Image (cartoon, rainbow, N blue to C red; front, side):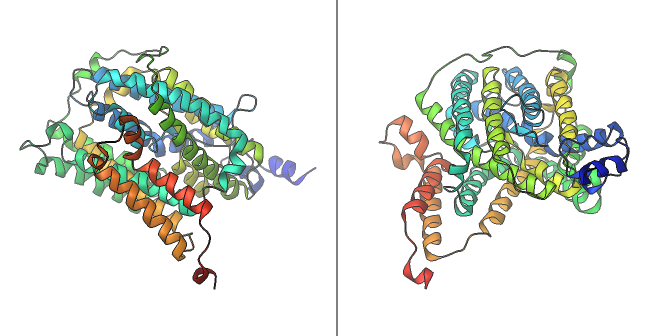
Length: 461
């Protein structure tokens, strides 16, 4: 009998206590008594992050909270839950070459927001056709990258990946402040930035920190969600919550293809394809972290390619039904490192819960009753954590003069053009969209300079 077999025989499958071999085995199922709470913990850790991109995109387009077309936002929230669940099952259970067969949780990606927001800004629901069509073709391109994941890794050292994550954070920080102050529609009015708005956002932040640092287990892991619930309760007591949309929403709804239509845009497709490269590298990093942190080994080539393929297929599938791109969620990688349990079946149970929620419009209707200031308190923390993750990655960089200059030019030009898009007013519109996205020019410059610039003599002396 092998050591693994002995480990399996040591404890019954329903036991919460597990041997080391069982904890490190992706195929081991600990029984429902242990699996259900662990799966709920995974969903609580990613739930708000998963639906937030849909709220941000809808708000940028002009059909967010309080708009006549808010039903479109409700649909997007449903798709965020439904296809996060389906894409997670593609990862955990797999289908042929698709999927890593590891406990990877998929969710709607923040990384694509710097591309999606300019595509839809102020253009209403109609712009979603361009966005979802671009995501469809970008997802297919993303899936094709699965053949080249090993070769791509060398072009994205910590210097580049840290810059990419930093640019994502810098692109989003303003959104958190706008939400906490009452939302973009109120800008310029006396109600924007009122003490009531900042009170609600501050309560969420304080409650989140309280749960994170003064509780343990699931309470600590779900601190952002619990902080939002505290803020929601205060907002309800203040009369800031309207539950009318929840009672009016149906109980069950199924998606249908091309909900927002089909509208091909070359610039949108290129943007999503370029971001697909970044997302693929992020997924490779998450798979490597899960394999090393959970199983104590390096990720296998088929796990890396299968995870990337599932990423792209999941994004395209979601786009067909009006959903946003998805990717692996790093916060759940951290949960696996914390619990030490590698069972993919635990994550599969959580995926089923997400799918059920995605088919229930009342769940989405409840989410959009959250006052935007309450959500603002949560996203200020989440976007700040993205910036913290960038600093953590960049701490692994050897800060030679060469690397400092690469980072300096990429950050300065990429973020500077994002802050001042009018500087390129004479550039064709499609090209200007890329150059002022912040993320794409910074990433392109960093990759190019890292590949072509030699080390300086003073750096190697």
